[in-house]
Length: 370
Length: 245
Image (cartoon, rainbow over all chains, first blue to last red; front, side):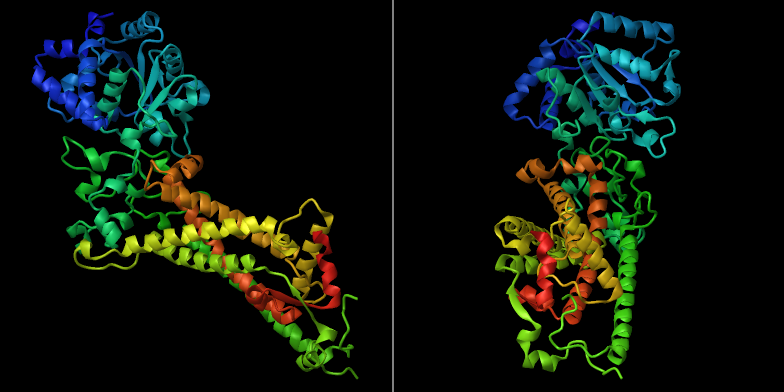
C-alpha cells in the first residue's frame, strides 16, 4: 500500500510542481464543466485540498484501451498530472510498472484494506459464454475478477461503451456473450460513462464530482451522468442551422459538403446520440467528427454497431431480421393491400354483372335475412 | 324465364322508401369530429414524416433565410399533438357515447363476437349481402382496434418520447422518456416510429375501399354516415348488432 493514498489531490499536485494558480484554474474549469455555479468553486477547491484521494482499482476486460488513451490525453494543460494524481490509482494492469502475481496481490490487498472504500473503474466488459474463458487475467477469468473486485467496491464507474452497453464485442452475434457491467453487477451503484472512448473532460468531470461531493452525480434512466449525457449532439451542433433550414450534404464531394451543410442525409447519428462532443469537442477543443465534415457514428449509444451502416440515414437502413428498409417494407405491404383490394373490386364487378343476368325476381320488400 | 333486375332498384327505393330502408342515428357528433380530425392529422403526419426521414428539398443560400425542415417538423409536431387530443376525446367518448361508439371494441371473450367476425369475413369474400350492421362489425372493429388504437398508441408513445428529446428536463420527458431505453435507444425508437407509420396509409386504403364497398353494395349510407351521423338499414339488419349488448 503506498502512502499517497493518504494525501489529498492538492498535496500530490504540489509535489509534482503544479503551482496553486494552475490548480485553481483546473478547479474552475472542472466546476464549469460539471454545471456548477461560481459559488461552488471553493467547495471543489476544498475537496481537492482536504479529502484523501479515492483509492481506485482500474480493471481492463474485453476492450481496446481507448478509454485510458482518452483519459491520459485530457485537454487541460496540467490535466495529465491532475488526472493521474487526482485519484490514487493503485491498480491498473495496463499503466502500472509491476506485473504478474505481484499485481494481482496488490489488487487482493486493496480489497482487504479498503472494504467498501475504493472506487472500481471498469474499462471493457466481461465475456460470459463458456464460463468466461474468452478473457482471462492472471489465470482467472475476467468475469471472476470483476465480481470479486465489485463485491467490496464503494461504487463502480463503467468507462466507455464496452462497460456501459457492450460496444463492438457485444454486437450481433456476440460470439463471446460479452455483457456490460450493469448486467453482471446489480447490487452496487454504477455510473455509466459511454463513448468509444468517452471524452477526457467527461471522465475527469465524473471523478471530480465524486471526489468533491462524495456521491455519484445525478444519473439518467440508463445510469449516465445527466450533466454530460443529458442532450443529444444534434441539440448543440454548430451545423444545426443547416438542418433546420433543410440544407443537407448529398454526397461527400458536393457543394453542400464544401459549405459545411448538415450531414443528416449522410447518416449522421447526432440526432439520436447523447453525448457532449458538440459542447466540449475533442483534443483540447480542436474539433469533433461533425466539425471535421464526418457524421457522428453514435458511439456512445447502446448497440450502435448494429444500427445499420454508418453512412446511411435511418430511412435507408434495413430493419434487423427483415432485411429491408422501412420504406420498402411499407411500399411492399401497400402494394399487397392494393392488389388485395383490386382483386376484391374486380370480383365484385364480375359478380354484379353476372347477377344482372341471372338473379330471379325477388319481391321489393324482401329481406334475405328474414 | 328469369327476369333481369337490379338487386336494389333505385326507383323502387324512391317510391317506397319505408319498404326498403329506415334511418337510425348512429355516429354522434364527437365520433364524427374525431374521425375527421384524426384523418386529417394522420395524413399530415405521414407526409411530413416522410419528408423528415428523407428531406428532398434543398434551398440554396444562407441557412438564416430558410426554415424548411424546421417548419415541417413544427407542422408534424402540431399535427401530432392535435391527433393525441382527438384520440383522447374519442377514448373518453368510448364510455360517454352511445352503444355504437363502443361497437368497435374486440369482445374476444364473447362467442357471438367470433361468430360475427367469421360471418363478416365470409360475407366479404363471397360478395354477399345479408349481414349488415348499424355499428361496427367485428371484423371492422378489430381492424380499427389494431390499426388505429393499438398502432396509434405505439405512434403516440414513440412520437412523444422522440419529441421530448428536445427538452430532456421537461414534463414530456418525465412522462414518455422511458420509452426510449425500453426500445433500446433513440435510433431504434425512430426506426419503429417510421416503420409503424406505414401501417396508416395501408389502413386508409383498406378502410376507404371497404366503406365504399359497403355503401354501394349494402345501401346502408356508410360513407355519408360519418358526415351526417345517420345510417340506413333494412328490418333484418338490426339483429346483427345484437351481439354487442
